[in-house]
Structures are given as C-alpha cells and as structure tokens.
Length: 148
Image: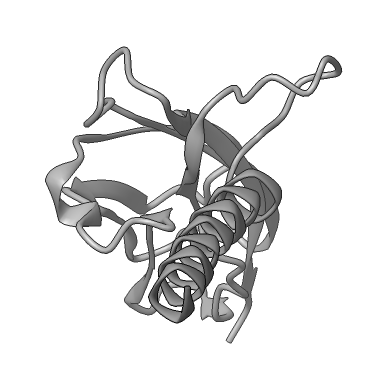
C-alpha cells in the first residue's frame, strides 16, 4: 500500500511538472489566438537598435553604424539580413552594408538634420514551422551635420 502511494505521488509530480512546462510555454513564449489555440512557439524578431548617431561636421570624415540582430535567437548570425534605407542622407555620406551592419561614412558636404528610416528583412531560418518569427522591422534615425 505504501509503495502504491509513493508511485502515485511520483506520477502526480511528473504530470504537474509537464503541466507547468506547457503553461509556461503558452503564457510566456507563445501566442494563443482568441479561441485559446496555440499558434506557435518562440518569439523570434528582426531587430534594429535604438541608436543616437553622432554629430558630424561639414568637410570632416564621418563614420557611424548600426548593427541589426534577431531577438530571442542565440544564433542570429545564421540569418540573412536585407536592408533598405529611405529618406534624406547628407550628400557625401555613403551607406555601406556589411552583413548585419549598416555603416554611414564619408565626408559630408552639407549641413542640417537628416532624417531617414532603415528597413530590415530577414530570411527565415525555420520555414513553415511553429516558431513565431517577425521577419521585418524598421526604425527611424537622424544624422546631424554641423558647420565647423
């Protein structure tokens, strides 16, 4: 009788751990639709950093950059990154794309505050799976170029 109670308690504890694991997955890292159906696991997102570009000066070399990543993914180097920059960039500044990095470099020839938006798209690493992935994101930035 005692052995039977111990086995039942052990099985109950196993079921409790499994239930806690499932609840953790649902409420912390998964999306649940309005009918409480599990949509996916994980929550991987393309990400651009919050970044204050340094001020530049007319006719002086300028160099600054942002580095993209994939949130909630320890292997974000495994993704392909595609960038688009729209908006005003100071004349004389060139945009250089190097894998996860977008660099702004050159010798600006005009002053002002230049606002632009960077768009990021990543190729899926887990196609057609239950991993939640936001493949695209964007962020607005600005560069200020001052006179000497």
